Length: 287
Image (tube, rainbow, N blue to C red; front, side, top):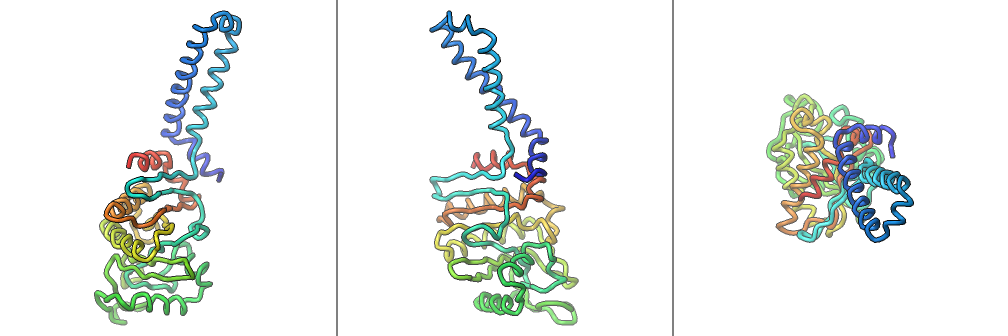
């Protein structure tokens, strides 16, 4: 486990609270077993005495530590709808299956509009080798069946593409059996700044899942906590709430008809340090 992630998890009050609950639960269970054994074998219990108490405390401590140890992943399988949701710490591009890539309503690809640290920039470099001409051609083909909402003039928008598509438009790109879902969840301003809102994020997610359902062959789909970078969502909603929004939107759509066999939400280690994964695990378990 990443040391920073481990330390962040150990410091959280939810981790300490879970440890205390688990320790007391384990101690109570062990005490009950010891009490039963003492009734059946009083001479043995009397002879052992303190070693039994020390052993019980040690076992409860181990159990509490095991239960509360910070997680780097957790999941839940649902019977209805028949699907699975996981939250993992790792590299989005090392996951199997399809990937969701957050984009803007103009589907711009060139710097400085696309920040080098963004998921889209990583996608362009790692999956397209930085060949933006090929990516733009693929995006144009993928968007050929979509209707632009409007077109900017070059005087108004000095850089990048001029056609604007509705929020929630999905450009489906393919690489063999793997698909990349370019999701327009933010607006690229004419000053080359990506902006979004909670309603834009929700609406784009609800537009995404039917496309995944119809094109993803019920495979695994992985997504980052989109919106926490240049889309300016971080001032409106926490990363944990973005993850909750992804979960509930996926389940809402899946309860109409299954979207995918497995949704995987991927957090990079540095980002995961800022999230209480235990609370998210509890949230997922409660769905």
